[in-house]
Image 1: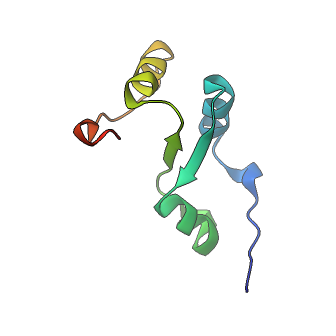
Image 2 (image 1 turned 90 degrees about the vertical axis):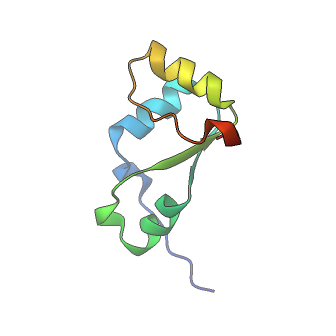
Length: 77
């Protein structure tokens, strides 16, 4: 099995700030994970999952002036 390491130090500062700000588990998911391994120098966006509910994430983003997109709320995401 081929395992490729990823240099997480290169994650954008905003992602690292979110992780420390939220103080909850955050997970990189979806196309972000694929892109970290296949084309780490050209990641266009970051998909993040959390143990928080969508409304908790929205509240934290609003309180901290973090841009976010409220899509798929009817699906709980």
